[in-house]
Length: 127
Length: 426
View 1 (spheres, rainbow over the protein chains, first blue to last red):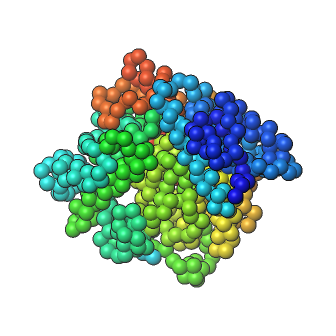
View 2 (view 1 turned 30 degrees about the vertical axis):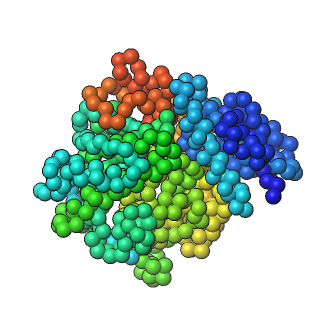
View 3 (view 1 turned 45 degrees about the vertical axis):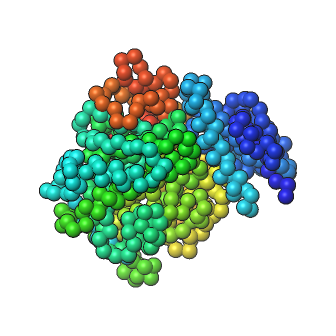
């Protein structure tokens, strides 16, 4: 069945894992810019389906973020808009250090972003 | 449900030929505990070490902290559904080894978490600088996936804690505390004039190193439910998370949850402690909505007057926290929420990623972005190789003189959102 969601991401691992089976919008951009991409689509009427902040790995520490939004469009969803705007605000209070890690750490950041997204996908596909 | 908690005070830990507890001293056979860890073929090797309060020792990267316990009477065993077989726990008699902890350490991902300093300024921020720590550093077999390694270390820590707890089975506790809860009807009859109050505990449940387990069930797959507040004392809830160590609940905190213990202190005096409600913090927004709807519904169905809500973690759980608060208040039930803050290094940014006027009674565990300098210590258990990869740290963290400039985020338990921490306000 056609998935009712799409994924906006800057994480190459997501493209690798889901590129064949899911609708992915992959861009080589910053964490904050991923959130802004999501915000722009919410303005177009898409709904936010997964939370744009992680539970522990902070914005500006991990460079990677993947967010699920609805494929379909409707009226602007105020709830989605409030969450994404707050998330963009939250980015700014963390010292930027996403570019200061050893190369192998980025692989782990990609993995953690994937496991968080995977749990969202599991919920979406169950529904 | 009635649980007698027997406390056995441990004054010292020493390695010895035979494991036993005598005169408050825990003797540990290194060979025996190694065998317990190596039962899992995914673990290649393990080293044990002892860290005592006041010693110039830094433990990192910390994964979990566990208090050894043994079930002496009553149904089930410690860590039901995980180590013991599934059975409802929380009644009978349980002994705990107080003043000590099993600390698991090991590198699972490159930006691993958690520092416990046994002395110096860092020790003031982590509650686990005050416990005698038996530290186990586990190395996995080659080529193992992070998920499998995380699980292997998690279970190994529980097995060692249960092994040590068993040593206390035949001892006489130094102190006994009794925790008793009523059924709903009993409570109404016994305390007709006291407000009905419950504890809503939010459990982090999002993915690798972000998970919590209830009777062995991954908390992201539960719907909110009610528990007797004594169940956690037998290990009904265990930790699988450690990233951003300041505000994650290690298993030790679940066993000793101060919200539950403080609410028991008030039970029958200032309020009727009705029950412990657990809910989760999932990634998917519809899950957040369902869980907060259910939590509010349960509060209403129990005719509560008030709840204390504790959060775990930061970021997207702020949304769960505010949804819970808003919806529970809308049912006419008063809330006090416990959180921590990410208010920026200068403390001037907005503390939470979400807010609502209903959240008008808030307790904070402190600002996790606060910067602290940790001086070089004589000994490191684990490795400093990963310190620069801890949340709140970067490649520039390790300074030339060997000291570390970090945010409080890196210290295990520094801004804990159940109040199991050392920070306070003047």
